[in-house]
Image (cartoon, rainbow, N blue to C red; front, side, top):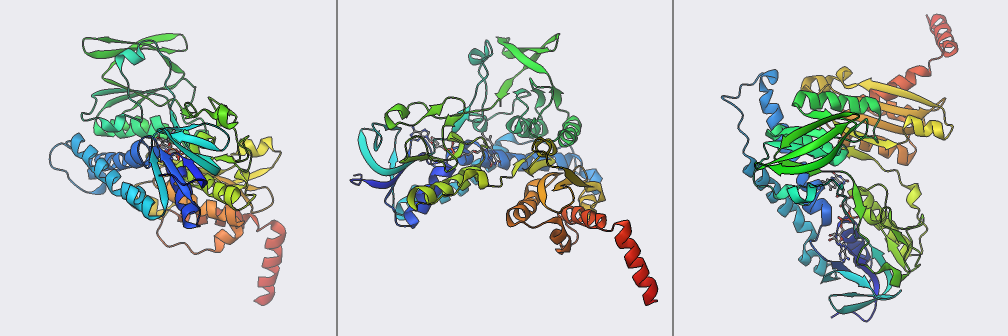
Length: 477
Ligand SMILES: Cc1cc2nc3c(=O)[nH]c(=O)nc-3n(C[C@H](O)[C@H](O)[C@H](O)COP(=O)(O)OP(=O)(O)OC[C@H]3O[C@@H](n4cnc5c(N)ncnc54)[C@H](O)[C@@H]3O)c2cc1C
């Protein structure tokens, strides 16, 4: 039975919804959480968790194939056990899901309702015929894959992140449509399992958000993995013949047809805004950008807030989490925390990983900020050499004439771990001067960050300063 009125009703039990419901209940609010499918949302069930689990195994296979480089011998051929890979992924998912269980939520004091939420007014909604009234509500309905409209695709059948992790057999030949993070991560994983993989990307470059030299390093890695990357290429038609899928590709004026066994689409995400009857709630939205929110994550109905993929440009689990925390402060405690104040890192978990935080050089130039960049190639870092993981670099951009970090791109095997140090420095206002004085354990790949900071320090040794030092030392002799 629902309460007469909730302090907070949360729609969607993905990362944003779970974080908000737990936090609000812990702080004493009367909270209802509504979920129409699975607790944990995309990240746990069909996103970060299963993708990272299979990526780990694919890396192991790649390393086994290159075992001799590490002085090891693998007797016979490396045989991929795809069903064991998927079983390991399911076990990991099940284990992590315990943190988001019904019991954990109800023990925390959250009232849980299963079904699709639909607003009936500005202060109420229904779920499976039950009406819930609220003082405040948060929409955290996430996003879903945007499917390209290619003639014949639906009839031929295709994979998205929603069903690719249900595969029981490895496709022998795979076409990945889309060269964004999802396409790149899964293309590399499946290629390493043994699928003959092609990426078709309609843009002239893949990972369009990343710096070009970062994407180039990944492009070289893909070539080593045997992935065929076709840029400027659109899939224009799909048909099934003799049990295989034939896909017509157009690259500039060149037409070709590829025969494959499976198609995986990774062409973007669309927010889940349908079926919520947002008009009744007075909440403005757009089918492409999602729920319209201001910098405080408030919608056009002051009682209703939104968080996560349903409203954010940066569709990541950590932004879903951070935005949910903002909503709790602003909706329940009269806070005025701004979305724009967040420093948001991200990482594409290919091998090597590509991580970024803050501004790119071109964005700084657009803001008329002069930039100085310090770059350390990973092949100058002892631990990367010892690990045989020399592809990549650490690049840190500072405001010219200062040590203030504006942004950073890291390409390295564990770039996702390394970017956190730079993010911390940016959030805490720590400049390269201080980073240079932080002792980094030797040998670690994170030392590349200290080396970049040391490179900055050397620029402080101007000819004038050098002359003063030299005179001082001469006088001391
Ligand atoms: C393959 C893949 C890999 C990814 N890897 C990463 C990664 O490595 N790192 C990272 O940071 N991000 C990653 N992401 C993105 C990440 O998964 C999302 O940003 C994150 O899950 C968003 O959380 P959310 O709470 O906003 O939405 P979701 O997790 O999508 O949760 C929304 C929930 O709302 C429910 N819902 C929707 N409509 C209704 C309704 N009307 N009534 C009731 N319930 C409803 C849905 O069923 C769902 O459970 C990945 C995404 C994909 C697809």
